[in-house]
Length: 78
Figure 1 (cartoon, rainbow, N blue to C red):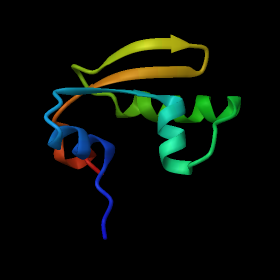
Figure 2 (cartoon, rainbow, N blue to C red):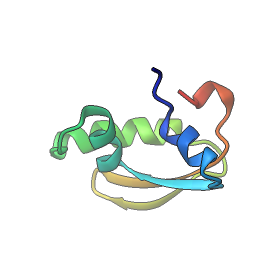
Figure 3 (cartoon, helix red, strand yellow):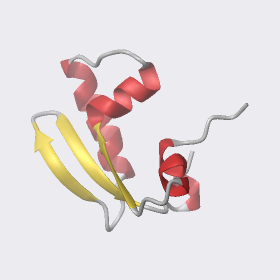
Figure 4 (cartoon, helix red, strand yellow):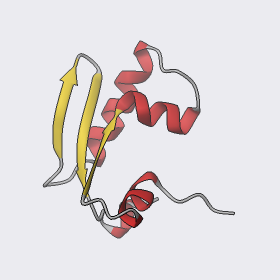
């Protein structure tokens, strides 16, 4: 059984955007509570995935929350 991405799930629910924090992304992928070094890495990955129209809604130190617009380009859905 394949797991659909967070973005795909949000699109199916009818959302036009989704806010995602570095801590939430880390918990969803690793299934552990993040420590300070993990925020820096996860935040960097999230920022690199941001496209025009996406907004950083909160940035405190290495913790970032980004509002990603939906739908995502096809090459970014997985």
